[in-house]
Image (tube, rainbow, N blue to C red; front, side, top):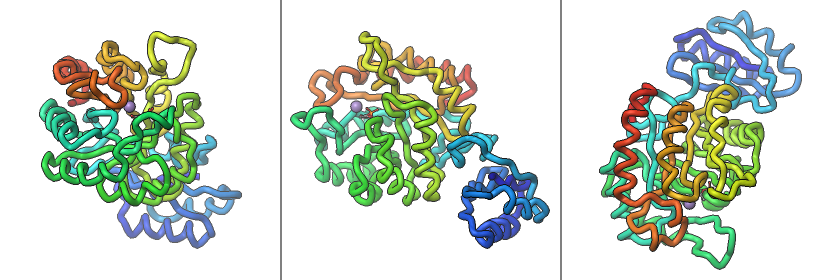
Length: 338
Ligand code: PEP
Ligand code: MN
């Protein structure tokens, strides 16, 4: 059930409802929106017990959530959720957020140089993994803990937000200290203990759709984070496995408007892992904007041929600059400043 509070309901009125929910033996999940606050309540027989709240001051209405994903459902926050990423940047509102950078952090020189570059080109968030989930154990696995001081250094120097993949629950605390946004990769979308651990932090979490996962599966994964009390969840379509071999994965562009209908959470698109090649990345970015994506996650590298991971799909500096220029009128046409 979702208790929808009156627009502008005062904090003490909302708190009284939250307290009443607890008193009835349920865990309240308040979601504070810019205008409206809703309190989601999950559990058996909620409907009959929650009915008594209908007459409490500040309660506009109570609606049942019929989907298997309760807290991620659109009905919980029909106006959509804007997630605060820090440093004045939000996603899910009007602005379109560009996150860019290398697949992996390879060295201080590489990371600082590309960081400076993507920042000057207009990206708000710098990406770069130190834990890389590689298909083969013989491939470069990332700098791991050695990458943490580099992340600290770049944050100070560039005053930029950082996103990085967290591979297992043991890495959550360590990374929380330095990154602004956790990335949960396609291979880990159903790593439930990892999702739970991220849910126990207050950091925004980008959850990439599993390469063979349905949208329902993705929203149930998001639910694992939300149910722990972390409402800062962002969904990311990054391409699914199909029979087509011309590109690495198939960008399921239909996922963007469909997820928007199903859920109140912001939706991003990663065209790089969808494509696996740089030449079609700009077209996929434009399609993502047209479909209503709230953000883009693009791999860039100053020397793609020399990259230790995913060089095949990285945009080089001139291509990224061109992309940012090309996207401007598309973003403008969609009413989304970049
Ligand atoms: C990545 O972003 O570098 C990555 C490994 O992505 P995905 O989990 O989508 O494959
Ligand atoms: Mn990559």
